[in-house]
Image 1 (cartoon, rainbow over the protein chains, first blue to last red):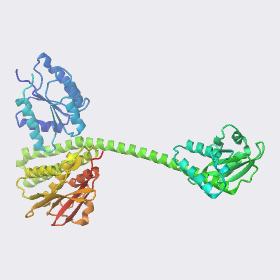
Image 2: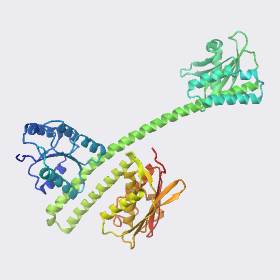
Image 3: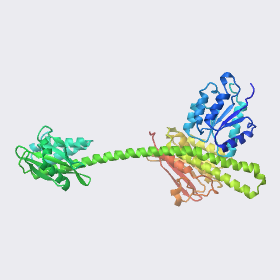
Image 4: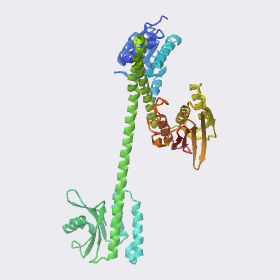
Length: 145
Length: 404
């Protein structure tokens, strides 16, 4: 199967975090095929238009990096919609958030998240975490599609 | 109930018995209505009066009669008597007992009106009627006064209990609301306060990485100060959140091997800094009951402190052990490090309180506050002894048994 045009979909509304995340992904040469969307509604619209696992459409990202606190449609709602739609339900989703709250963590796993990562405040740790996640899901992990 | 007074000799002993029984009886009542009902009934069936009842003044000035005994006859005439109503008003105003002989009945009828005092004022009037022209003996009047006093006390007690209950409910509601507020605060703290810090730290780093070579050393140093302080603020926020979370997560009680926990924590401390040399002596450590994760955190904070504050000391030595004192198990962690001045003991467990400067020993000043919070939540106590340059000992107890 040919490589997707968008390998990583970053759903994040904080511009500073977007820039730092892209910086970190650059470290592993992963920044070229990243699409950034800044609210939940837009993200769902994009996904359902470009990606359909049931029809073997090759527009699905290998990884969605999802922030929880988003305008309009929250991260948890986005996750729920992705998981409950046959077109998108197998896409690996990693929640990347500032929230350490138990209820967010538990609810994310409840909705079928693949991984839950708390964004470190310190930049080296943050960059390390982001680039490792990117590398793992894009290059090491084999998705079902 | 027997007609106790009427059939007994009127002696002090009989009054006392009657009064004691009345008091015992009233103590078990839980509503105002019950108090009124039962006293009226007692006056007629137990003390041998021909009628009894209560009156109070309504907000509009009207006199209202209630809980009249017996329910079938004579009493109903009281409210109709203007004269009687005036007497009730008088007793309410003066707070003095009054005796009235009423004409509204066939034959002579003497009524005793007794003030019932609630708080500082006369709130109700109790009246007791006898089919007689009088006089009513002083002894009987005294017993009636005592019963009226008892009625007042009982009503007051019920009122205070109701007030207390209301207060307690209010407090519980407040605590619930505050806890909710705290939760939403720490939620937004974890979310909203860390994001800007990440940006400050990240972008300072970017500046240093990308433009650092063109800065003089002073500029580079100043950017370093910004970054370091932002990082420290991040640590403070994390510690504060941990502290607030400790206050609201439920305890998960289980039997704990204190020895196992101490060994585990020491291994963690050693692996974090393998270079650091210190001697650790683990004495006898009986099992305890508690929340494993939280007690582990306590041991980690105490042991990490012991290791930290004995840094630079030759033959740094940490001792963990226990003393059995009556009814409780005391655990302790001792070091021979920097110690502290007992003069500042009251600041030792305070949040963000530090007894040493940041340049001497790093830390945010939350560790011991966390220790205290956890031990308190376990129903235990924590205290310490220290001496400058001789070392410190931290003691804590845990509840002997599992509690819910």
